[in-house]
Image (tube, rainbow, N blue to C red):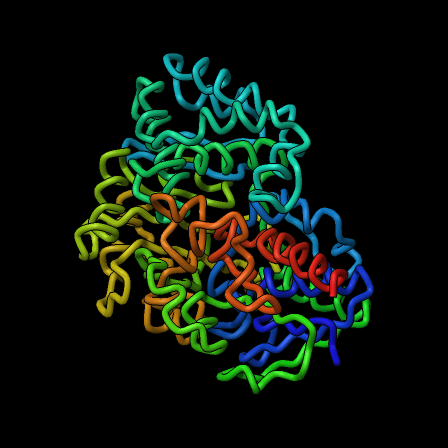
Length: 469
């Protein structure tokens, strides 16, 4: 009998398996797809030689993850690559605000009226970032805070809605960039704790950047799987789990799945019926005949580019997708251009490019034209660079990854109390109605992102049970 079985070989499932194997437990992972990865894969989606990331591409939380940093993943091929700028936010007038490794450079890009405000906002937390990140991403109750004073101060700043925090800024540049940071978790700007979302992404950039993985996001998953195998763990692909009796006997079962799928497989009935899924995304992967022709020079050297003309436009796009049930006319876009720093991703002189906008959950329309109209506003002539495109709305995203219910890549709405307490209001979010069954997906704290911390935290709950039994 195995000590633990993990269902799902995404970053959280693999991290949970590694953490258990490192402590001497026998572990096997079962994955429905033909390879590991979940939201961290790399595939030729458009033309031969163009290697795209179907979901996550830039990894500010990955390089800052306490779980990943404690593993020797570089021995297994993981190499972080940094663009000159972690992120740029261009405006229609051809200028841009930036999120730089340098706080001073970032503040200066906001203009003189907001530079000091930004520096004062970041100053209490950046020197203590490593401890804060560990405390913030380990909650709740998976470990005691190492710096409770800084964590409490962060909570006071971060718990209010981002719309409150943005009142500190006087000009559009800082407000728009910060609104874009919040939108990365597809959260309406006025939600509880959305200030914390924006702060975490900003602090992560200043601490270690927003890198891509050399060769693509698959490198993260492959490194985790290789490390697991060296620890004695096993990975079984092409193994879809539909019922609990599809799995071998084990002392504990850990699910890197949506709560909906877990309830169906484990027979938990309506246990997660109140869990909410949020807006979906519509994503386009491009093969380009050269770099994106951004008007703003800063955007040409940034790994990630946020596309939204103003805080109001970004807020309206989020509201349309999340609250009004319609695709926005001017979608807010998150784009990543890996080829700026990794020429191995495309043939010589060509580039891969990645963009998505938000749409209602379950959306079946085509947002391609709206996305490209937005890109043309900030990069005139973009369409002329397109060699091929691969589009993926919610149905295609679900087909690739069953955790993206209705196209929700956060595996659950990151809004309201569910941003903090997920998948249920509980101090023990990784536990389920069965004492030997646990959940470790992005539906658990600290939530979405390729960081492995949900798996890390869940593994702690699992090994405590295994040692007691």
